Length: 227
Ligand code: DC
Image 1 (cartoon, rainbow, N blue to C red):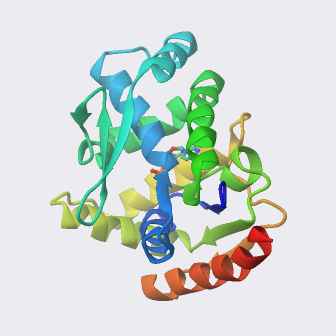
Image 2: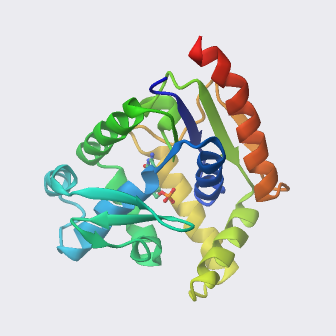
Image 3: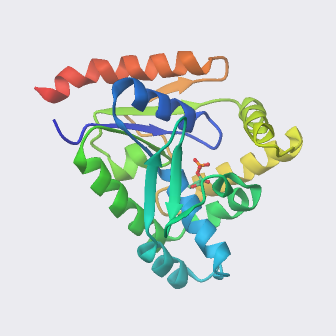
């Protein structure tokens, strides 16, 4: 069977990446982190000193960079034009600039084109902001992950401190709040829950519970999709 997409959307730090990666592992599906794609374009823009206000330049950059995803031990390595930038993509300087870069329509067009090509190839779990609404509106499984702002900031703090980056909870809450607002209020494909998405509020759930729930929903949809 080809082209079975499990779409997972949700706001910043809602647990999408961890959940999506583990669900993909459990189902033996390909995992695609579309946030990492926008972060990669942002990384390249900062690296080349591209003016973040220059939409034409950002569009050209997004169309020309070579993105590669390689499955590692516990994570997917991201390569931009041959350079492994996996760790750098999570740096606060990228998080701060990525909403501006991802709001540029020409950047989105280039990324969506790549996402659809990957999705057409087979079974995959795709996570982002507009996957169930814009990229794969006909996906057989659409999940929207939600969690309280404070819980999301706590999770982000833990994730950063595991990498040796210490940031206060208040500052993280402010950063996430700002990013959510930019992602939800932009004109082109804003963060929005698809009407037919299943909402899972993960505030009080463990990662294992989230994964189990998404796997259950996906497995229930699989037989129908292969008929
Ligand atoms: O999931 P993340 O934090 O890595 O995403 C980084 C940014 O990329 C996020 O602030 C909004 C943008 N994004 C997007 O606009 N559309 C997507 N499908 C995925 C991410």
